[in-house]
Image (cartoon, rainbow, N blue to C red; front, top):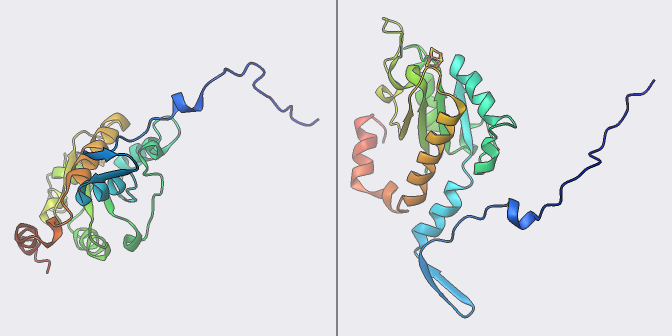
Length: 196
Ligand code: SF4
């Protein structure tokens, strides 16, 4: 016997325009047939709503990230459903899990293979500080090898916390000047990590 196909026989009427939230336009001047705004704001708007995460998951926090990507929480609502495993095509490195000292150079290598502009989230206590593993073999925070933009606390953080951290990084990305990556301060930050 074939399996019955079920249909929703009581569909609710809904207006698509009411169920889609639109991104607000950046500050600017609008007139008849034109809109002018700062280039940084427009670029920031595009970047923050199209982040491509690279999940570097080594342990339990990675499972929580899977829940964040799944339909209930759905990171895709923030424009970040395109998760990639090629560093050259991603701009947001999400490190989640315990990173051993042996793994440190690998995290750094992945970071270096990403093109600028790139951002980093340390998800969970382990990636942020070593967590409960205060041992000889565990890196006490990935910021010892690469610069981190947002830390998400928790062991593990719930998907709500991951979404909150993601929105924080969206704010940073949206407000970043397009000149920041060429600034002396940014070069000094990179140099402090031995990155040219
Ligand atoms: S922070 Fe907790 S849940 Fe996340 S990787 Fe470490 S031990 Fe696992």
